[in-house]
Length: 383
Image (cartoon, rainbow, N blue to C red; front, side, top):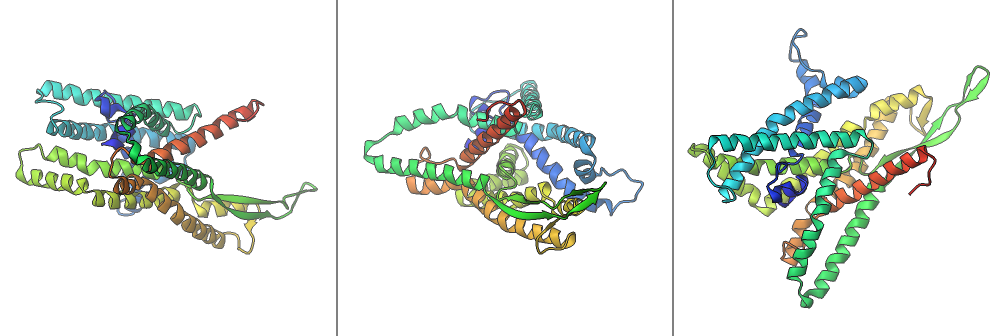
């Protein structure tokens, strides 16, 4: 439940009105992003006079108006997902004896309150993003991680054993190496040289300059891990909910799901796989080689040794796939780092939250860039 508590900004450990955090909103975003790829193909199976949302066009081509419609659908989808996750969470808390039997009225109030808390956090996250302070969802998760640091330090102090000093030193060294690795991969990029042909317009020469196209090793940032966590937690929550119904078949399915994802090996493999898959998926969403190639061609730019158009797009796609493999494997390793460290330390407290480190470092780097950009606009010295 540590990951769930992190994504709820610490709300889970306090059983607060925001115990779900932004989880339902993230899940809704995943579904909508997937539909941007699936719906255009489904449209071919329907008649032209049927109403099928053109989500991909809305998301990529309709500008701000399309993005606003896309975000509105995501918000609406968040509500039923929040209801389902709240019911599953209440079932989980009941099975662990945290809460006792509830009347229908109390149950309904808990569901409505938790859903309202999620809607509030969703609004707050979008407000933070709108004000240019970075990704609002990531910042709220960042706040939850930082807020939990004092508690973690107190727990570490309680179990401190002077005979394990070398283990602690090694633990700190691994944390430092992990942070350096996260910074290196986050800032790492492959530079593609771009040349522009000289053009004559109105008696003046334009172009003829050489520049470059930076391709980041981790194009997707922390989004794949956030998506993966939301999905990897969902089956166990559903399993806990099914275990509390009166139907034997559903109880059996719920027990199987709960026991399956309680297995650390299965959990680690599924988590790692989801991170890798979502890294490729989200990179495909945010980076379109075909459109970049078309833009370069319209502006008179070209990649050395490549023909403008299709050949350039294929080359860029090939390069992105190669560097994304490195980035996805790194993100996957970071995600399951706590499980690996736990094997060697045999302690749940001496575990390195690779996901937490990645989110904290990435959010700090992004916030520094945002602040620097604002300072440059206002002619202040950079950080």
